[in-house]
Amino acid sequence: SHLMSNPSSSRFALSALAALTVSLSACGDDDDPITQIPPGAADIGADINTSRTLFADTTYTLTDYVHVNTGATLTIQPGTVIKARQGSALFIMRGAKIVADGRADAPIVFTSDRPADSRAPGDWGGLVIVGNGIISRTGQIELEGTNEGSPSNVSVIYSGGTDNADSSGVLRYIRIEFAGFGPATNEELNSLTLAAVGSRTRIEYVQTMMGLDDSFEWFG
Image (tube, rainbow, N blue to C red):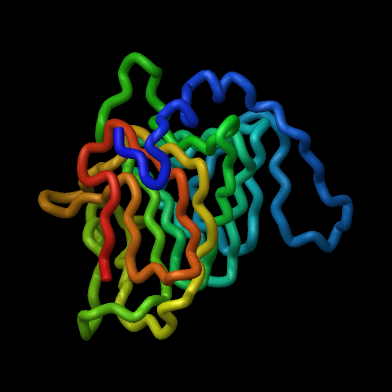
């Protein structure tokens, strides 16, 4: 496995996942734009166009290429587990944000949806963040691994950014497992892909495990 910012893998001990009890609160205001999901299990197979919170008492499964689109913020509570099927990935698009602020004792885990004894590298695509940073290339630059394999894996252009201090949100105490699926030959996704991500994006204590392609890949 590969650990960024903190060499102590004990912070990500699997035993921490046995304690997913957190204090939850839900806003009672009917005007609250955050989508509330009841406890249990929920599939996520459509793009996210309005802000949404994922809760630690619900196990989520990505069933397709899911894009969090401009203007939306995806908030993930500490201790939340997000499983993913083959042919799925999570994209945080330019102008959107992810706030995945886990804790050492309650990391946020992205993993394969297969049974524990049959999970393998490349079971799913991974986490992709596209920021508004200025890159060194000109023209329409398409992100590797997109626009391949499925109509829902749409072309993602990461050139044309205007703000090197852009923020795509927070990743803290995250583990990404069994990712790195390749939609086509030489067109792989990675455990964590960062494209034109701005300097105000906070990334700390992120671990990848058993990925098929790169653990971390930057495009700029």
